[in-house]
Image (cartoon, rainbow, N blue to C red; front, side):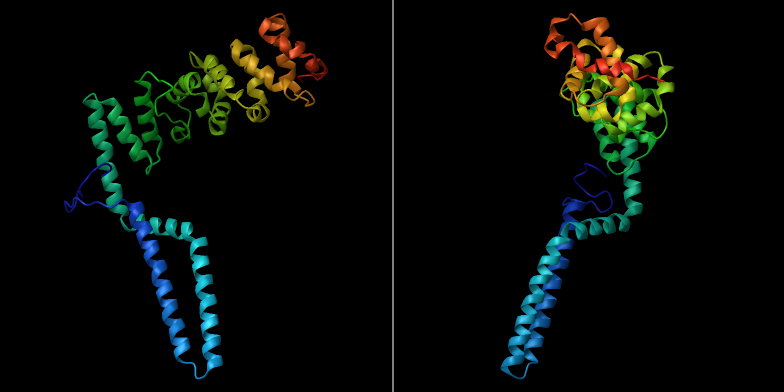
Length: 294
């Protein structure tokens, strides 16, 4: 089981991580191949009958061994992963059984009140088992914490295939403390389920926070313009300023509907705000207003 220091089946204390076992088997196979090549090389030389045959056999064997080592080094990672997969398949039944036990133990730990330990246990199980049920259990545990920037948080591995209000609420909280975790998959999830999110009590605020996370990078502004068009007016001042700075950094680009919305909000709220004066009134967006939303 995960985190155990002794084998649950035989009681041995010296457990070897499966990664180390796979690496050892891969390395052993490589050395066996080299040894076999050396034996064949020696046999080829031994079968020679004159200096020319010995020299040819020696040169050919040396070249082949060098090529073998180069090929082994080139495909070492692929062979390691193949060996790792074989080990997992070989112990698939035991692995499934052990993960089931780990999952049950994590639930027991949670019921006993040790939520941080329960979360870590579920997270370890989640590295090998990816189901919506397990993701939701982790999300519900995380929702019981007060999230902080210094916490070891994650998001993309927890994204479910279906709409989940609990997941959306977690995304909303993360958008406040760890905007860097809001990435492409999360933006796509939010856009796919936007209408359902809007029916939630804090849905519009959550979408605005996600839009605020999108202005971290120019790439996101370009990739998800509709998100920003719809929620630019809901952004807090610092995030809207960040959005304006991104647009201002590329004045020659046709920002389309994003430019229209930003220019409208800017003129309505921030035209005379001292923090926005360095942007020159965003006049470069004035031409965007000639593009119709429809």
